[in-house]
Figure (tube, rainbow, N blue to C red):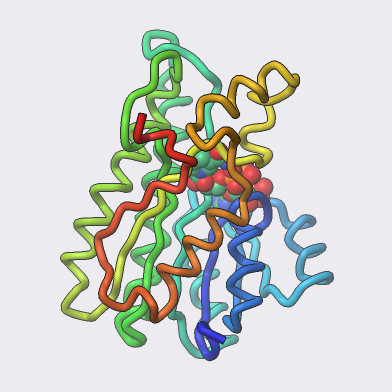
Length: 246
Ligand SMILES: NC(=O)c1ccc[n+]([C@@H]2O[C@H](COP(=O)([O-])OP(=O)(O)OC[C@H]3O[C@@H](n4cnc5c(N)ncnc54)[C@H](OP(=O)(O)O)[C@@H]3O)[C@@H](O)[C@H]2O)c1
């Protein structure tokens, strides 16, 4: 199996794209730790699967530090970091967004990725590991009526940070790549596909005629994490049914 002997951390691995990623990495031989905020959900997942589940809010540096320490104590190493945890704000135009709502999105989607990556880097330096950042099509281009500016800003930031980190840590042979999904069927997007009419609209927005499945993003993560991508760093891959190409 391609990830045999490797240890992965998937933040926000308790649901959606993160959970699908944890499953795919496990199926390919990795030992996988997942984090999230909801302790009960994490405990349940640990009971029914082989994941090592840790409650850690990425808004809290101490919880992040503790989570990375626990993983290294348990498995002795860290090879793969998937910066996946994220939140989506209420749809509002810029002039309607309160400062605390703005800051909340930045705290999770941007500073949260900094906190986790900072703790992981010393361990990834030892293993010449790999980081996969989950950005979004919303970080690649602006969409009329999207009205989630804080989200778009964090996802665009993650794209440039992918390139910065790729260059900064190339000396340690740490590879840093980024995936930009289109709309994927998860809890995050449920409010936007409530009715069949919404779903038809969302499907039609994607040139391949449908929204994505979490597993389809997970398989791209697997590729970047595997030795098949050993000469790839700083890459930004749209996994979006052609959406960002329009
Ligand atoms: N779904 C899409 O269409 C789509 C498209 C483009 C990009 N993305 C990106 O893909 C990633 C995953 O999205 P998803 O759709 O799978 O989302 P989701 O179903 O809403 O799941 C989000 C995950 O992130 C965790 N999380 C949220 N805030 C956290 C925090 N402060 N600390 C730790 N964990 C936290 C959640 O854990 P708890 O439940 O415990 O809070 C959950 O496991 C996100 O970065 C998102 O922006 C999604």
